[in-house]
Image (cartoon, rainbow, N blue to C red; front, side, top):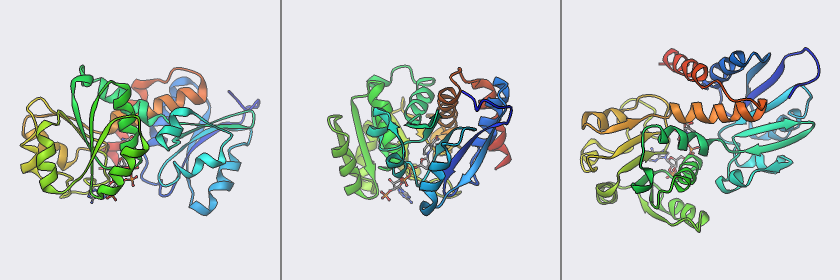
Length: 284
Ligand code: NDP
C-alpha cells in the first residue's frame, strides 16, 4: 500500500447520485483509527464519465474506490481483473488499485452474511423470502447460499425479472414469483427469513409488505430491510414481536471488508460502526 510519498492517499465512492452516502464518514473513521493518512471522497459520476473516472484510479496516490448505483455492473468491463464472486454477483462494489492494476471485488455478499450471521445462529434451517430482484437481491442470495440456506424464493414486482434472476444464478435452486398481495399472502406463511431488497420503503408511509400480510409470518421469523434506517416495514414487524435487522450492519461489514482489501490490514469495526451510526443520525 502507498504512493511512495507523504501526500495523502485517496479513496472515493463512484456512483450517481452519491451525495446521500454515509461511506465517507464511516471510511474516514476507519482510516483515522488505522493511522492512515488518506481521504475518502464522493466522486459523482454520470455514465458518460465512467471510463475516465476508472482510468483516473490508476494514479499512484489512489488506493481504490467503492462503486454504487448505477455502475456496479458496467464497471466490470473497465477493470483488469474481476473476482469470481463479483462475476457471479454481476456487481463490483470495491476496486483495489495496486501498481497500475485495477481489481474488482464484491463485498456486499460478505456484508450481508456477516450482518445476518450476528443475529441468526441457524440460517441453514430457514426458508428465505427475498423481496426484489435487483443487484442487492443478488448479493443476498449469494450470501444465503454460502450460509447454507437451501429454500430461497424471490418475489418481485416484475415477476419476469425474478424468473431471469433465478435462471441466471443456476445451479442454485431458486423459486421466483410476483409480489402482488395474493402471492405474498401465500408465500409469507412459510418464510422464516423475510428480506426487503427492493428500493421501496425508504420514504415515510411506504412499505413493501402491508402490515396485515406481515401477521402471516411464522412467530420465529427474522425480518431484514437493506435500507440502513428504521423503516415502517421494520417497525410494523417489531410491533408484531418479530426480530428485525436493518441495513446498517451490511453497510458497515461491506465497508470493513473493502477497507481491509485496500490497506491489507484488519478493519477497525467498532470505529466504523460508531461513525456510521452517527452519520445516520445526522441524516434523519
Ligand atoms: P435495483 O434498482 O437493482 O433494484 C430495485 C428493486 O426494487 C427491483 O427489484 C424493483 O422491482 C424493486 N422496486 C423498486 N421500487 C419498488 C416499489 N415501489 N415496489 C416494489 N418493488 C420495487 O436496486 P438495488 O438492488 O441495487 O438496491 C435495492 C435496495 O437495497 C436499495 O434500497 C439500496 O439502497 C439497498 N442496498 C443496501 C445495501 C446495504 O449495504 N445496506 C447494499 C446494496 C443495496 P422491479 O424489478 O419490478 O422494478
